[in-house]
Length: 104
DNA sequence: CAGTTGACGGCCC
DNA sequence: GGGGCCGCCAACT
Image 1: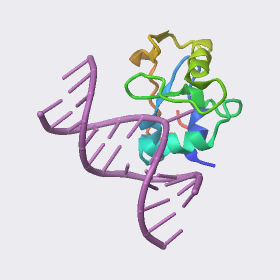
Image 2: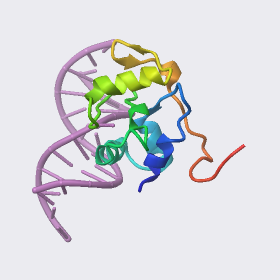
Image 3: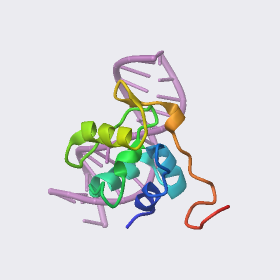
């Protein structure tokens, strides 16, 4: 198990997190996040589809359906996608003290 | 254990 | 804003 996987579930509905954000909280590199996500193609227990690139692009999706399914799931979450890209307004940032302890 | 690849990001041109 | 190159951590061979 990895912290990044846990962070996926911490992402509020209608919002998305970037690889770099997860990397920032996990203290690792965005490459690692992608690798971890690729190792976990389980959108059921872990909404990996809520993770997008910093550029707003959906990035990739190893789970069945591909990036198209990913976009579909995001829209179902309340995230509006424009030209296969997510608006920066949906970018969610994790609390600095949200490493592994609840805050506020 | 060592080498290469990959769901990416940042800097330079 | 777009394209190219380097760096990064983890997983696979």
